[in-house]
View (cartoon, each protein chain N blue to C red):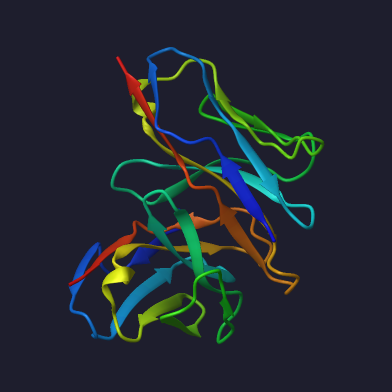
Length: 116
Length: 113
């Protein structure tokens, strides 16, 4: 079946530090890959996505590249801000158990805290 | 903007009660999902639906059922609430059957006492 593994948190960084959150996946087909962000007290929001190998998704200074050879989709940002404090979820979309319909499979989430 | 609205932000129910969690989306999306979110476990799929009256079990369907009588509304039902169903419940919808950009509601924090 499909699965997503992302680095354990919590992660605490100083403002302007470099961020990497690792994400690897297992999928039976050719999944699309996503990063979602959840700010305190809110639902999840799509941060970025990539739909095929070597695609780079980017948004708000965050980037992630779809690496098929390493089955990875690591999230990076060059200079984090206090406002980036949130929980980040890596996810994939693929056919669910061969049923023909698709579903999102999530990692367990990584909590990021950025301190001034 | 796409809006996914969950009927309650917070609910407190008693053990054994039948509980309905409602979710409505306003963008004619095909796919709708119910997840529960628990600390250390991330999001786990309970049920999803790719069309009206269609439903498929996710990874943890036990103790739950769903209803999708209209395209815009997807209801999660706890037939007989138990304390281990205390959790955050998240509804999501997506435009197509092949998930391209799921939109989430604010979540319902359910406490079963």
